[in-house]
Length: 171
Image (cartoon, rainbow, N blue to C red):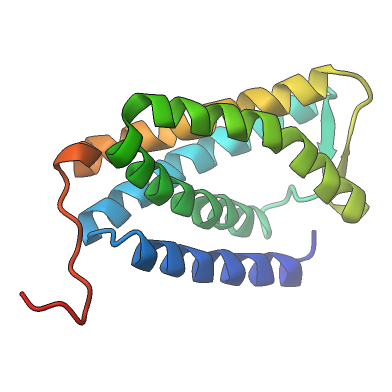
């Protein structure tokens, strides 16, 4: 993965974050909580990537002191919008809705990652077999519980949160 690709990806995810924050009507406190969840998941994902590489489940081409901060930022800005969406899901459907999101991410995650590696082989590769698929699924399964619970810890439960006013609404 080149530095230019990471800058582009980070910019696109940042735009997505702003749009999701706007459309979910998230308050500043909720956005801060989602960012805290994103940072925690970033640390978990980097550790999982390093562990998977050490165990031979995959090879990532992004390691290095010059590119690691960009990768970390990429994780943060890519998962933070997920927590703003899970906040709305929890507000509307409760824990059952969150379970559906976790299952969906667990099922969608491995094919998504394999598709990215097929499209951009210079980013890395996966070892053959089912173990890398199960490891990726486990990482995706941990995304929502870890990040959403930290967001909830910082910003409070979704059911008690007031939606932010839209700019055109009167106070």
